[in-house]
Length: 450
Image (spheres, one colour):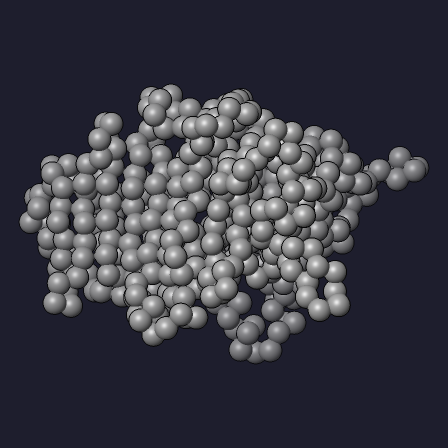
């Protein structure tokens, strides 16, 4: 369950940008949207947030900031951070800061770090085991070396206590996060943070695909059945989705490539273990194929669109022949049907990409209904240009966010509740008329909207 996320000095964001999913206290509309934590009544969040803004305003950049944080937390790679560069050299040399507040297994965690290029300047973590925060660790640089302060809760939960924690800190380099290194060394009190980012924070960009979706649906017949029910509800012009397994000819596949690339594929297949699956984004396999190694050899697991002909015969087509909208929706439906765990957040850039407005509405409304009915703490955050979705019948006013740039080209994020809203206001008309900003401004002989 995401409570808030903050970033500053990241690409087009010079100042701090805060996405807060806690409900605004003065907003009484759609009270059923509020998700309550069963064991901690003080943790209330909203199930959805939508972000609007003109092209180039910073919507994708904001989502990229969360993706960057997830990448740093979950993988041992150290990409250099890109600061805001349109102010001055002093701004470029300031650290980029990421912080997140979330709930996982009924504990609220406050985690963050700041970077200059690849170097970690600060890192901190607190946990709310009760109503008050407990510091677990705070890391900073002293004379070019990482040092840290450790909280009593972490010291008590660590074999060999403070000495072992200090030993871990002394062994990391300036680019590494203490969090990752400590979890590698079996400091279990810190593992929930990485678990949440890995298994409960899903970021879906416009071209994203759910990895190994074919195999997942093949193994989970109930989930495939539910998705087929939704396909019928949404009138997607296919009768059903089928998961099929066919023999996979490695030699035939590799023969399509030059020697060097073919050798790489051969090596990859040879290193696969039994029951291991590898998605193949290739014309031969199509973007929806997964190679599975079995005791008998290799198989291709694919999704196919099933139709019933006028003569009653059932035929199937490869999903590569289906529309981009059908494929887009297929990879969004897991947010509704594949993952039923608690405290999971789905972040989608350009939700409306290749989707009819009514399909996008269906997806949003169903997500809100299911997550509020179950009260499992699952959330949807997405950006869009589709103003038909900007509807008071769908969203509370504090679920709507706007991004626009100032004269210095810095992006700013604000909530709709920051504006004076009248009862019965049509959000879409207000937005398109320029009442809230965050729209294109046409100059010269062009129509001036704002």
